[in-house]
Image 1 (cartoon, rainbow, N blue to C red):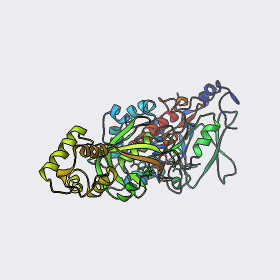
Image 2 (image 1 turned 60 degrees about the horizontal axis):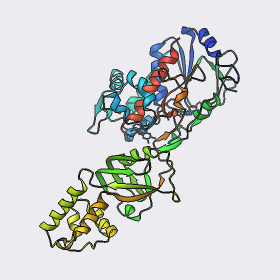
Image 3 (image 1 turned 90 degrees about the vertical axis):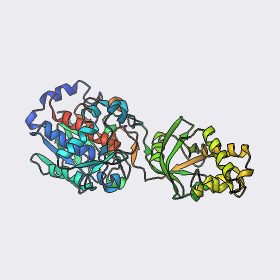
Length: 438
Ligand SMILES: Cc1cc2nc3c(=O)[nH]c(=O)nc-3n(C[C@H](O)[C@H](O)[C@H](O)COP(=O)(O)OP(=O)(O)OC[C@H]3O[C@@H](n4cnc5c(N)ncnc54)[C@H](O)[C@@H]3O)c2cc1C
């Protein structure tokens, strides 16, 4: 029984346990060697070099998911510097993150990696990458740490359970080991359950639940979306640098680039929308209505006026060709079909009413979302309930000595380096707090 609260030891137990930990003899377990766990390791080493720190990772190498980010280049963090603005990129967890983010904001993350010998660069979309464009340089920083004295790496080691003894020590059971390992403190950084083949299978949720933690509903986030409309599939491969997507249910909207796919839509704006609707039920029987504004920087009146002018200037052009002044050719054909205005009608013969209808469609093309690209989401929305974790330390409020960081928490963000940023920030705070005697 791993329970910490009331059922076994009672809440007063923690004070007693904290008092017996000795600085130089402290043993810390970090379960999960992803971004959060690795940064927790770095911070714990810095805060208490005498502590014995065990990193337990099921893969034979650490940082597998880090290597997937940014298409293998590792999107280390964001170039945004204003923490308040950075926090607007988190649909869940922004308030909770404030302490961790102010303690280790994107600017500090950048400085930290550069100090570790990884020069970084910022791209036009504000994402930060290693100058080498090689995510392995980021992971190598931590691999070096694993060879430091008093750091013990358990690779190809699956944590199967955590118990707490009456003496106050945590006992971590590792598959294949005859007896559990004993620790004063445990940092749970097992991630979410996205891209399970990377090792993030969601094991940590069960460990946390065993200590009384509530796991909020889990959902896929940052994924492509499938839609019912056949015309979307006809446009597969057609991309837009800027369109506004809105979902009336919940009043969500996001403006950015996207591309049509055979089954729907993908790209940064779609990922953001998928994040905003992560907890909305979506299925073929319960589709979610969505609209795309292909002319997000023009009012309806201005777009209608421009269309009218373009038609007047070339009255003998086919209407479909006139529309290519507004949208890509493939979409122009779809617009004519969906609005039932003949594509070959002379521009000079198109009525004002038809122009208004065309612009209305271009500024609110209706789509019904019927699914998400299953198994391809980048992150898991939901996780350990934030009300049960101290945001100033990342320590469990239910089980002192137990810490959380990274995607296991109910925190997730849009694309752009924000998910790694929260893993670094919470990991650092958890490692630092766990290694100190308060
Ligand atoms: C394809 C893809 C692209 C992404 N791109 C970006 C991007 O460009 N920018 C960005 O900011 N974010 C991106 N993300 C999200 C980001 O990578 C994650 O949010 C972040 O890495 C989470 O870090 P974490 O340490 O919390 O968890 P993880 O990286 O998932 O690490 C958890 C670790 O725990 C280990 N583990 C789990 N259970 C056990 C167990 N029982 N015993 C031992 N070990 C265990 C796992 O093997 C894993 O190594 C992307 C994600 C994916 C999948």
